[in-house]
Image 1 (tube, rainbow, N blue to C red):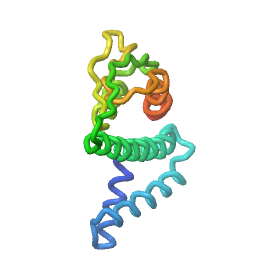
Image 2: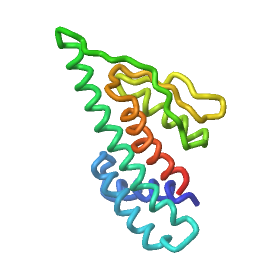
Image 3: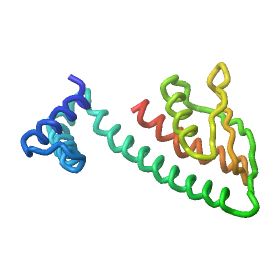
Image 4: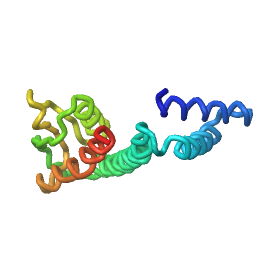
Length: 158
């Protein structure tokens, strides 16, 4: 059985035992069942799950922080008397070749205000991104590669 599914089912069982299916209670159930499953399956073939969950949580937290920062920057830009935009289309070279990883990266970039993934080369080696603010293209590329792409590769390849 898939460990993630088992983890979710145990979290739901925790919610049923506690008599409440609110987010806080289900989160506690998920954490407790994650720890329990780790003790039971840590030396099995399915142990990679226990490295993926913290990586997924880290990716989600990074994404949420970036969305908040981008929204603040967008609000400042819109509300300022002079819009200080430096729009550009940047080609980001990709090390990740898996289709699902590239799709996740495209969605993350597009969901962040001020950036839009435009296209991917046919061999999935370059992702073209439109952004409203580029001070330094190399820094922009490095942020995507060292941030989202590296985290997605760790999640999908582990």
